[in-house]
Amino acid sequence: MLEKSGFNRLDMEAVVARSDAELMLRVKGGDERSFADLLSKHRNPVINYLYRMVQNAAIAEELAQDVFLRVYRARHSYEPTAKFTTWLYRIATHVALNFLRDGRHARNTAPLDGPDGEPIRELRVTDPNVEDRLVARTRTVEIRRAILTLPEKQRAAVILHKYHDLDYREIAATLQCSESAVKSLLFRAYETLRGRLAHLAGG
Amino acid sequence: MMMKCNDLETNAIAYMDGKLPPAQRNAMELHLAVCPACRERIEGFTQVLGLLDEWEGVQPSSFFQTRLTARLEEEAVTQGWWKNAWRAWIPRPVTGSLFAIVFAVVVTVGVVLLRYSPTPSPVEMSQPAAPAVAVVASAGDETALYQDLPLLEDWEVLRNFEVLQELSNTTPVMQ
Ligand SMILES: [Zn+2]
Image (cartoon, rainbow over all chains, first blue to last red; front, top):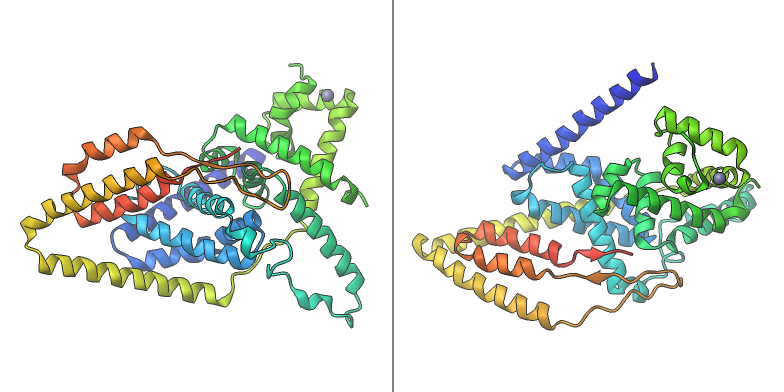
């Protein structure tokens, strides 16, 4: 039973992956509508990957625009040798790291305090659950800070593993390292997070 | 199969994800039954995974799609205009050699810039643990570019090349 559902899931992934590649090949052939299909499917995951990497929603959107423009510009040279999502996340990782490296974020934004998409209206004093929500928000800030202080490669691995359900092989292909390196990255990252977030657990 | 504390690093995450093969899974469980330290780590990891659920994602703003569509259209129009303009102004046989010359100039300038540009300084994060990221420019690629020169006689190829160049020049080395 378990094996059967596992097989079906893999089967489905293969179908989904193939259709992404097919769409991209159609874009390569000049079909703009296929690009819109790819966009609507991958827009939210890419924005959220970037959001969790740079921790600012407005910047994440800017970077996501850059990612999709790059994908569009690279359409002529696209070859379906790697899984489309892996290729996409690899580009997104490049864009995120370039941003984090060039220091723009240090000048323009304070990642955790900036206009980061947090629903400010939840903090109205008239709200009966305001204390609960403040506590929840403080916890989230601590969780975000803990992830932000991870080295970039560990951070990317954790985000792809935890929030994007990529398997080790896909994370390895995205970050251009071996599968065992991914396992080790994840282990070290979760070990660090365990230490930093111990006080939030089990409370 | 026996498992030791040192094996935890390569097996812990796959164990929690339920992706360990049965034999390794059994070995892991036997070890956890007798090793409080590893058990504590696994429990801690499970708690961390639970905590991370509390950080929700964002929805794209309503401007995202509009802006991206506009930028894509602008790009398509500009490219189409350039392509047509070049094709109309310059006789077909000339374009190949002309682009080879333009390309040679671009590559030369690019190589000079690559050689003499200073190494970018590491990222200064507000937290102390931020790692430095370095830029790598491969000398092998430059040679390959010169060798491929006569082949690059088409605007499309040249433009694609720039995109790839942009990506490969900025290959970040993490950690
Ligand atoms: Zn142990």
